[in-house]
Length: 297
Image 1 (cartoon, rainbow, N blue to C red):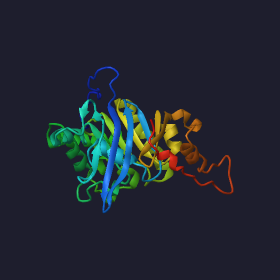
Image 2 (tube, helix red, strand yellow):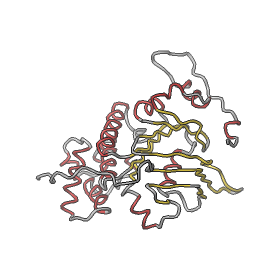
Image 3 (cartoon, one colour):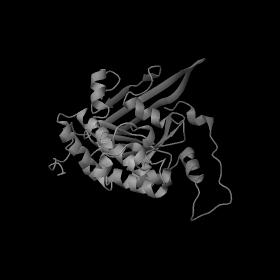
Image 4 (cartoon, helix red, strand yellow):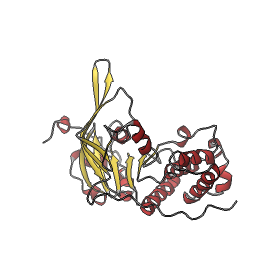
């Protein structure tokens, strides 16, 4: 089958100079429990342009909740407030559901941890990518299938014609993650949120997937929010890093300077990591200071 005609490169929409793609100020997210509410995000502020921002921290620190709040994907029972929660000038908290549907999967793509829980097991790979494209673009199903094949080629899947008609259980985890990336790229988004995109993959496949994401983000001029536990990975891959603990941002700094971090929490995370160059008989544990969660000016 002949491939689709060459498509024009993705061009970011015009926006006023210096306006960030994402603006978050004093975001707070609480979840209900029998005796009241549990604070999951405690007044964080972040911004993101067309760059790679890494958000790191332990499980439960609020990283994924922050990304889902931006897409308004939290349960209806969650209590979400913010001084500002905007995507490209759009007030996410005040937007209609119709506006949010155009943002979710259209202008903001979400790559999750494990493709086997994200892909539909009874639909072929090609059909799932085609539907992601048709949901935000006008065209025929034949054109959508051609775009799906082109996207599989772009994410460097071997034998894309065969994978196009395969079901998710017939492909490997690494191939499944590439399929997820192709689905998220189908509508030509302005931003990707990658939530632990390589945690379910082998180390060698992790490196391939991250290089792929980096190349695609750079080529398309997108913004990237990479949520991860892996500090060295984020330091190599991102432009900036925000370190979260218990729903707060402890420290934000250029990724290249992560090894020079000053906050004791960031230092503790770095010190707890094993090193092949400097092996230790016993790794230290992280001592947490209650003062870290006191209100800051």
